[in-house]
Image (cartoon, rainbow, N blue to C red; front, side, top):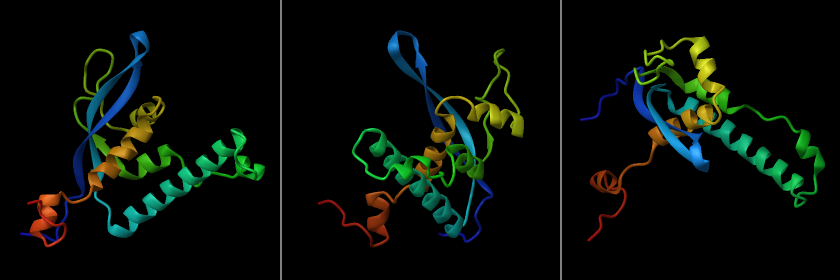
Length: 150
């Protein structure tokens, strides 16, 4: 059964890889609460993300000597990962703790603190993109989409 009513948020895991001893990375996972957005808002965020990636790629090409348009290096990004993460993150689970292991309340200040951690805002937004997902082959086959495997 498909319900037209949608919740105001969903809970989804976010994994942030942080540097650890010995030149390795360690994944830290928490449950994010993501706003449930309508299709137009989802598409707008994805478009902003894509524009940002294209400009970043052009900058990299110029810096590596492959690109010819040096004006690209100064081209403003349409957004940052903080902007994108801020548009979707509306809370988190009790796994986000302080140095004493006590859960940290979700506030603007604590969210800003999270975004200052290297890669955290990008991980939040990527997890939101993952939550949009694509249908599984089994589920899509039931709905008449993908062909079922024999």
